[in-house]
Image (cartoon, rainbow, N blue to C red; front, side, top):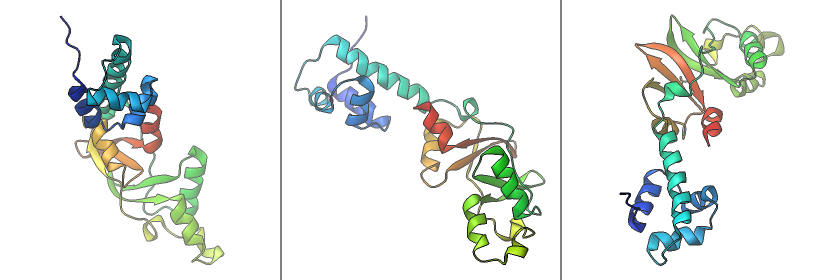
Length: 185
């Protein structure tokens, strides 16, 4: 026999998955006040309504628990610290990306972005900018996780970084961006 979730169980599960009442309502095709009344136990909803809500929660749970290796991109484009800003700019332009990890001998040393290159242009003579080295302007590297980490861990890291690198035995094996996470929604 199946057990229907209680109003309190629905509320706890929604909060555990990081969904607001409004988000849950939108995804389930119901109103936010209806979600609030169900969670408060004020009404006895139709089975079809509960079914829609539970389906949304189950889908969200699958996404949150999905291992990063399932959505990472590989191989990872990177640039050497000895490369020039011109080379970094051309690589980012060619692949339509806005940032790159800076890697030497398989180890991440930092990161470079379009923003850093553009900022550097305003501080450097035009004739010198093309030959300036990545190592001279790079910032700190991207956070890293193991390939078996789940999406919930990545989403927390992406509050402060738009890129996370995926590692296996000390080697970079994949990359995940905020855009990759957005595609899951």
